[in-house]
Structure formats: structure tokens, C-alpha cells
Image 1 (cartoon, rainbow, N blue to C red):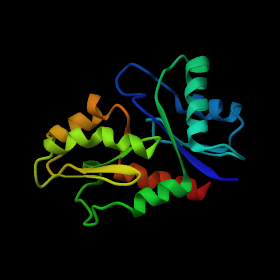
Image 2 (cartoon, helix red, strand yellow):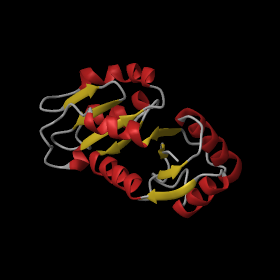
Image 3 (cartoon, rainbow, N blue to C red):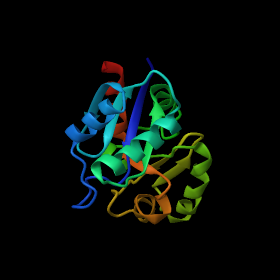
Image 4 (cartoon, rainbow, N blue to C red):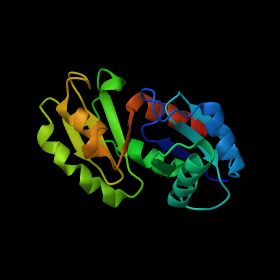
Length: 179
């Protein structure tokens, strides 16, 4: 059965939209997914599904979050193969000094990446921002808190995306491989 990665946007940040990872695992299991695992406390999950597309899984999980947990949160689902492609496509090859300064923005449909284009003018060198074919990548050389581009990506300009740091992306790949 294929492996998928679910990324919930904006959960467990502050006091709003709280989702316990045990509740998320149980919810995914009730939806019929198997091999369910979660990573960190920020809405990252991996699971196996016998059929369906990533977009269908995202819609199902989002609806279940509202109906069962009373949490409205956008959900992006990628297959393990799509996640591997996003990692291998990464245009920032010189490894940043800190993975926490390196962000990957995920969207459900690659056509939504064009909505991130307004972030480009906010990039201050040596920051780098690249929109790839399946994700966008932002390296914040002086840190995320100091970056106007990161603030935009994590805020309203990036509302079509959910963002993870590079370390989390690599851990999700490992978790998907282990399960």
C-alpha cells in the first residue's frame, strides 16, 4: 500500500487550533488508514492508504478534523514519492548552516505555487527563495525571525501553503521509510 504524508497548517501554534497527536493518529485510523505515525506536535503524520489521491485524502482528513475534533485546518497530503521528489528537487544545494533557517512550502496542487510569487521581492540577499515544480524553498540566512520573506510565507501571503523546516522534511521522509 502506498505511503502518504499529511501536513496540517497552523495547528498547535499558540493556543488556537490544538490537535493532540494521539487524537490525530486515532482520527486517521478511523478513516481507514494504516501504518499511522506522527512527528513532533505540529500536525505531521504519515499513513498508508489502499487507494485514493493525495487531494482526496487531504479533503477527507480536513473534513474529519472539523467534524470530529472541531478544528478547521488546511491539510496538504503528499505521497512518499512526491515528498522524495520535493527533497531531490531542492535547488538550494549548499547545505544551510542551520536546517531551522531553511523552509519548504508545500501546496496541495502545484498550480498554487504561483500565489507565492509576491514573496520574491521581500527576499534580502543572502536569503534565497525558489519556487520549484512541486514546492517553494526559502533559506533565511540571518534567521526566520529577521526575514520579511519568511514572515510573508508564514503569514497571509503563504496562506495557500503549509511550511516545514528542512529538518522536519527529512525526518518525515525517514518516518515514511521506516513505517
